[in-house]
Length: 319
Ligand code: NAI
Image 1 (cartoon, rainbow, N blue to C red):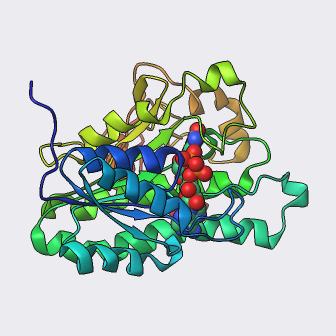
Image 2: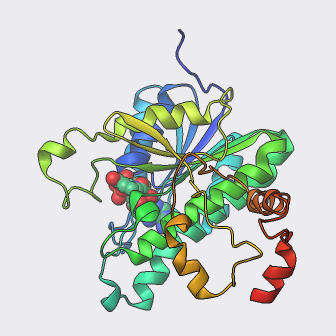
Image 3: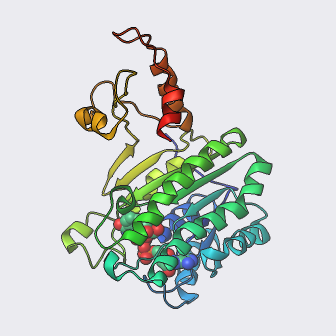
């Protein structure tokens, strides 16, 4: 099998001065793409700025015979980053929203600054870059986006309410971009990576970090953003050579029938059904799925007292 190539394509990698972003940039630079190496060059807590981080990566790509240009803007000015791609290469094909910082602190001690900075860099930054790239993607009927979530966002993580909120936002953002982009051949997927970087080097032991090379996250991203890739709107966990997909699961659930009282007590009596993940559990991927479930319930016919369920009427009673 021949290797995946990206010749003639322009890849923007945010936060490409180190860690995962650097690994992406070097890879795409070695596979024929022109790479915009964005990095603000600050600390992992978001303080300071420097052009050095991006320059080092650009030089490395060029020294290996690849094409790359640096951009030093914050992702919160994502339009300037995309502008760098357009000015230098005339197009943008692939956007890797990767830049990120941490401001870990217990919720009790969370300050507005800790909260706002994290939401700004991760959520607004990813939005600004994607928003600026979107018109080009639509016009050329082609675009690939990777957003970066985290296990902290999917599951919660002590001391990371700000980061968790921002990272789960990446999932909803991606799922909607995927739906809006599909008919223009714009695909968006989201990854929750795990890799050794300055972000993780202080929280994980060296022998584990040794097995979590950023390079091992790269191949999945490379597959997802290739022009022949079909995945769209999916969530992946990736790291240490392991790649898995995640999806939502809805329990088979409790349906209050016409003969139930529609009181909190009626729910408590059947509480185990609310959380029952049995063979009737479902894997929804759209808002309409829940309405479909309700419609199906309404068609279940009369109960053993001969009453028919009027679900719409009952909902109106509750609200
Ligand atoms: P890293 O700290 O090595 O790299 C992040 C890069 O983003 C840095 O070079 C930094 O200068 C840059 N950056 C920060 N703020 C920026 C801004 N406003 N504008 C432009 N660039 C900015 O960290 P790592 O580990 O490579 O993280 C990459 C992404 O993966 C982040 O979004 C992070 O939250 C996410 N992630 C990483 C995990 C891991 O295990 N390393 C786990 C889960 C998520």
